[in-house]
Image (cartoon, rainbow, N blue to C red):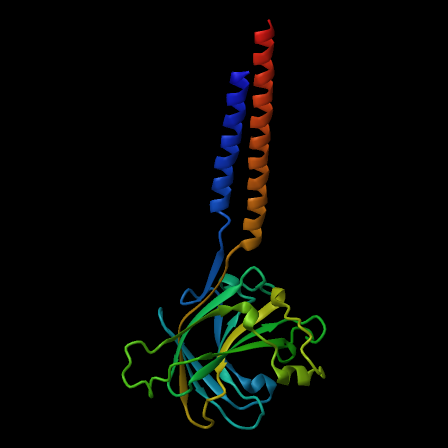
Length: 261
């Protein structure tokens, strides 16, 4: 009986060791958009929606610079830099699933503007027509920048923003454009096509400006996989306790039989 008991304990120890191995491999996932250059980078302006703004992009190993000029002519003007989320590792593909990520970090600086807009464009099955850029669903978040012409020689001129992807919102102008009176709550982050960093609301029109980007990354904590692993751990521990209780009862019965004999 003792031999069987030790074999059973050894079996559960092997299960616990295997659980620890797989748990260590189910951590969060991280993708770096820059400086890693996971996706194709391109200059972006509002010409696709009838605007006249311009953008030129230059990239080094550590810095991405977009020289922009915002021109009047449209109610919502913008220019900056885009990341083609359909070009993972620079290979053309389908839309990118952002639902496995929950957080983003961005380091930016600027010449004059004191804020920038981050945009995620997703393929909306209702409003997007044949992947047309102008009909993609827009999600926006405004973040602070550090205008280095106004910083007065500060040691750290890059503004660092860390936030949840859930903070992106559909702007009112997009809802109005689709004839929606209020936000329908849909994002379609599992169908992301582009990520963009564009000029903020404070950008002066007709005056050249610069946007500097040092880091863009997204990550997820893998909570769903960890929750499953904890359920598995609970099942293993429950099985171990049940085995020890049953073994103790059987041992007690055998001992009682020996005493009766």
